[in-house]
Length: 322
Image (tube, rainbow, N blue to C red):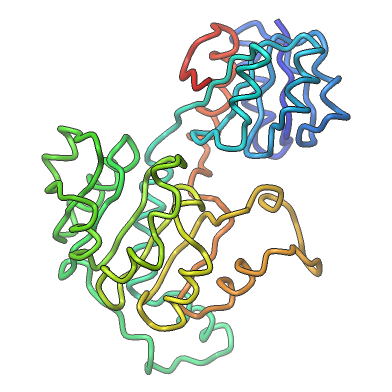
């Protein structure tokens, strides 16, 4: 069997594609660019394609179908970059992967602590040899209530990590997880917004989670609340969020994702206009950590992403989403 790997990265994924390609008897066709209608033909003769978070439009899906592809596997948990309705119309199977939950969970706790201790301001001042104290006083997490929105595998791992810090833990999810319930008290989302000093999001991008953080919901939050988002950018209404940051309603934020990031991450744009006004504003705010969708990025996760993507195509099952 042949599998075409788009966005094939020589500096990290190549080792794992070679390792698992041999282990499962699969020939990997490396394509270093993101998928386009022009390079869809490179997948001709392949049973499936494996991609990352670049748009898979109906035109690309149609071209893959004509090339004989039957399965699209994204090496990500999220799959909102794939036109699922188009895939269904063209009889294409779509799957996503799971990977080491510690990657995002550990990163989330790091971002919480960095936000509470004003690390962006401290580091930037220190780079300019300004070692003064005013404005850089932090908070201790043990004194705070942390709300976790979404208690799937990653959200529950975050709760496990946080349980050792002595903070009060509450959670919200339409489907209660027994492991999470042993670590945190489940409350309605509105109550979580009202009670939390820190709110961290671990939900997928769906119609129901679109703009969970908006002008109305932020009014219910505590003044100075800290917001962490390592899930999907669409959870936050970005213009309204910027207003709340500038007004002081939001005390600090760490954003590993942002709306309309597709096509920007993971390129080098030094000295270039990225044409994303909100990202530019957030990047320059002293109380905002604006990060390039890196929470997942560990050796364990990359290994899992490559292996699971290959296995799903090979077996025509896995986490089927469309």
